[in-house]
Image (cartoon, rainbow, N blue to C red; front, side, top):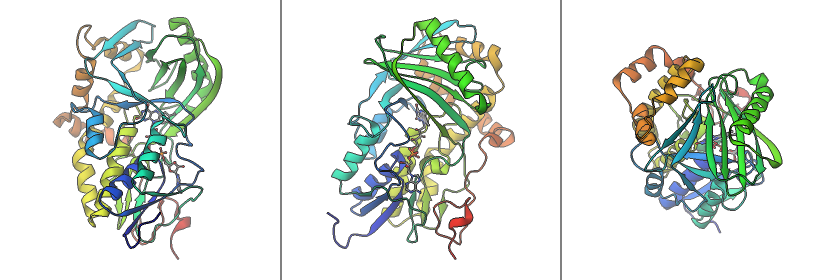
Length: 377
Ligand SMILES: Cc1cc2nc3c(=O)[nH]c(=O)nc-3n(C[C@H](O)[C@H](O)[C@H](O)COP(=O)(O)OP(=O)(O)OC[C@H]3O[C@@H](n4cnc5c(N)ncnc54)[C@H](O)[C@@H]3O)c2cc1C
C-alpha cells in the first residue's frame, strides 16, 4: 500500500545499491519506488557464492551495515581460513581471527543477499516495480543499474558436490591473467570460477585450466554443474551526481579494482545516495562517498597497478608475505589503508586503470549519460 502524500524518491535498479538506497529513503520516512527491469531481484546471478569483504576496514562489515539499517538476515558464513596457491601450485593457508569475508549467495532464491534485501525493503514499505526498466528519472532519483562496461569478467560453474567445506584461491597468469581463480565449497554446494582482467576472449581456456588445477590440487568434484558468468566495471568518477540524479554501486563504477569486490561499496553508496535525496540534500552525496570510499578506491587502484606488474614470480612472492602465524585480515587491512604514497601513485600512474565511467551531461534526465539516445528533447 502506497502511503498517501509522502514524497516519492525513485530508484532505478533493484540490486544491493538500489535496495540499500530504498531502505535509507524509507528509514527517513519517505516513499521509495524502485524500478527493476527484470522479473525479480538478483537476476544477474544464479545462486553462486560471493564474498562480502571484511578486510578493508577494522570495523566489521555487518556492524557497518547494521548502522545503515541493513540487517544481516541473509545466509552468511564467516570465512576465517583461505587456502591459497601460487603459480607453481605451492599451497599457503592464510587465517584470521575475525572473518576475512562473509560467504553469501546471490540470486532470487530465499536466503540470498538479494532476496533478503528485497524482503527488508518490502517490509519497510518500499514499492518495487518489476519488469519496469527505467531510462529517465525526470524528478531525480538514484541510478543503480549495475555495470555498463567490462573491466573484468568472471566465468565459472555452480555445482553440487560431496566435498568438505573449503575456500580456495589460486593466483597464476595461466589460470586467471591479472586476476585469480577461486573455488568455494559450502554445505554440498560449490562455485568455481576464473576472474580475468585481460584476454577475455580466452575465458573458456582459463576456466578449463582452473578446473583442472583444482581437480589436481584439492580433488574438485562437480555434479549437476551449471555455467555462469558476468562482468564488472571499476571507475573513480569526479562526481556521481547529475543534479538530483545520484549514481550508486557499479553504475558509478564503485567496486574494488584490485579483486573486484563490489557488494560492500554498492550497499554503502546506495545507502548514502538514498539518505541524501530523502533529506533533500543531494549535494551531500558526493561529500559522503568521497569521505568514506574514495581514499580506499585510490589505494585499491594503486594495489591493482602493482598487482598487474607482478607476474607469476611476483604472485608467489606476494603470497609468501602472509606470515605463517600472522593474521591475514590484519595484513590485508594494512594493504588497503590509505597512505600518502599510494594516493600519490594513484595520481601519477594508477588512475589510468580506473578510467572515468560517468561522463555526465547536465542537460538531461536520462539514467545513463554515456548513451545519449535517451537524452531529453
Ligand atoms: C560473477 C560475479 C562474481 C562476483 N563476485 C563478487 C564477490 O565475491 N564479492 C563482491 O563484493 N562482489 C562480487 N561481484 C560484484 C558484485 O556482484 C557487484 O559489484 C554488485 O552486485 C553491484 O551491485 P549493484 O546494485 O551496483 O548492481 P547489480 O547487482 O548489477 O544490480 C543492478 C540492478 O539493476 C537492474 N537494472 C539494470 N538496468 C536497469 C534499468 N534500466 N531499469 C531498471 N533496472 C535496471 C538490474 O537488473 C539489476 O537488478 C561479482 C560480480 C560478478 C558478475
